[in-house]
Image 1 (cartoon, one colour):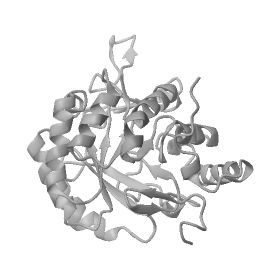
Image 2 (cartoon, rainbow, N blue to C red; image 1 turned 180 degrees about the vertical axis):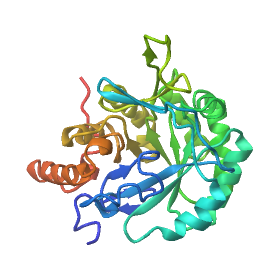
Image 3 (cartoon, rainbow, N blue to C red; image 1 turned 45 degrees about the vertical axis):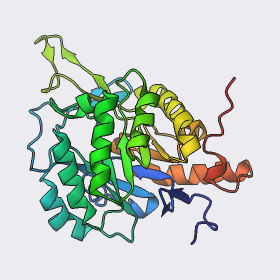
Image 4 (cartoon, rainbow, N blue to C red; image 1 turned 90 degrees about the vertical axis):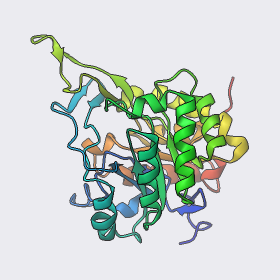
Length: 312
């Protein structure tokens, strides 16, 4: 089925995705996490973002790493991963690139590390590279880079020099001016954005009077952050639309209505993460619902929906 025959197909940085759904980094391991679930298939989504990868292996943070909150979840995994060489040499060859698109997620503690990890993914079959400059659950790198427009631009610029593959910058909501940061990243060479990463949060055990999360703080995801994410997508879209820069809208998407809201706000694709934890087959429901919406409103495709918000 080509793009004109499939109303759910989208063009994302020159890549044709057969669905607007993107499985988010950290939620699906290295592409195999949910393939053990009966009825689940990577073919139901347009792309899969692999787990955050650093230059050297990382053991991650001390427990507890995950904690359920009202309408959400705190996590502080700490970028546990086997290192880029193992991912490129041992994991990528096991992926079926005919199923869907696979996006690497690059993380680091220094600008130089981001460059080197990106360079190694450049010489691999990966379809695109997401730059994680906004991770709230590590003690170095992440948050500092993502909340400082100058540092964000430096990371994007150095990664741009290391690859010709599409670069997706994952933006932090924990900053003063997300649209201004996006503008700087576009100037530095970003091809797309993932909006947003998790919000910073905390939970406290009142008996011990200590944080529940071993890292003290973690990233809050799930339905609780959806209104914030939706606003940030709309703000970043105002910068992106003139440059035809696509956005992966993400943050609390669990229903068809959620996904459509993000598309209307300016997202080209929508990310699914925490929802998979309690409904691994949610993507089938989302695809069907989005398709029905397009048909009901007599829209030829998703491009007619993206950015169609009419402000008061």
